[in-house]
Image 1 (cartoon, rainbow over the protein chains, first blue to last red):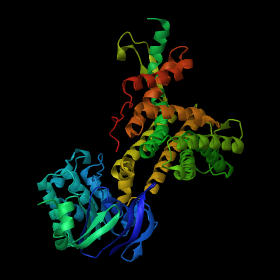
Image 2: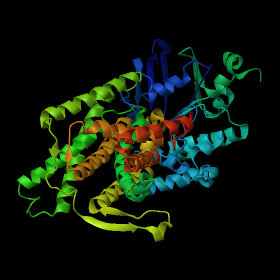
Image 3: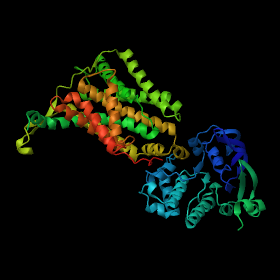
Image 4: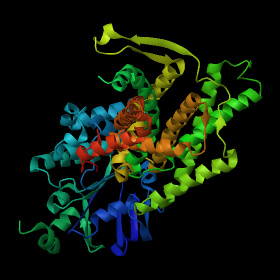
Length: 236
Length: 330
């Protein structure tokens, strides 16, 4: 469904991705783990057309994403929940969700999906008229995911959803991600600093180190790989 | 009480009425400055010229309708229809120029250091001003149908009984044109409010103003939203241009300079980037100007007073009357 082929990308003089090779099949949850600065977020940003790809190809459902701008990538069915949630602080919760459905014109469907988000995250329904900036970190993450769901994506790119959140909130968010994958068939590419949580959620994983994939395989296998245990899972 | 002050008090109610009319015109222009600043963080110094071009386009439309024998003196179209058509034409012309200016002068250098769009904007302003000078001539252009001195609709007497014994007698005279100007200006402002706050595109405008990258990730075409912002601002400026030309019964190719300066000042006074702030700033500045002019010998001081008001405001409220606190912008 999503395929990256020796992708080189970066910012200015700095090359962050040095030949990233990965693919995500329909219906999977795949995770990217690695240290800070390994290029996990940059990989997602390259898919979304925000970071310029210097060489290599990225394709989605067989279609090249080269040269597409971020709103054009979105229109193909990819939703990106970036690091730091990036909620519109002076828009209400409801307005934030409606912006997620910007490219849709089926108002009854949008209303239905908003109700669906409120049933996944009831706290958002209680706060639907509040400004986004007044929500807690966990609520903002819920809103960020809800907003992405409103686009009815076939592929969801999730960047560090657990960052700075209490364990209980993290659990809620990950159970919703699993539910979206199981019930709606949404494919997920997950970047997560908590490698154990990531591998517990995903069926497959890639390990990134300084811009390259150094290990890949089913989560169960990565969880027992001594190198992964030492570098990312600690002495659990 | 000095005689000067007596006279001032007696004329004050009229000055307030005139100031509100003038201020509503400033507000219409100021909205364009503030919307563009809100979304791009730059001052579109060519905006005054877009207003000026609107005033010319209004005159051209009225003249064309008269030439075709459709409106003006004795044509089949009523005066109201002629004015509405010329307003629509001015909006079309200014809107197209606002769109084009953004495309050729600002979009290619978006993301460049702040000085670049500033210089580009000043260049665009000089270009448009002189283009109109060459195309339309250096003389004042008269509004083809004289309207400004007629049509007094209402005179409100303000005398001793209503305001206490110390208030000198006076009256407020409102012309049909005053009322139409106020109605048109506030109608457009309400329309803008509804557009920005209640529609999907307006919400997208606010989203783009806060976080362009995120707006793009949600599927919003940022370039399109920015174009809409420029066109909306230009349409409001065109309306102001036509309204003022009818009032003054003429326009001039440098008309955008001083009006633009006053409107820009209004936007800063109200808190640049803040839409209600631009309206408030325009009204405050319009009132300051007309109230100052009312004091005997005050009309020489009106611009000075306006800028003193601005400076005083910025000393105590650096973000303007309704400005946001520093650091609130994402």
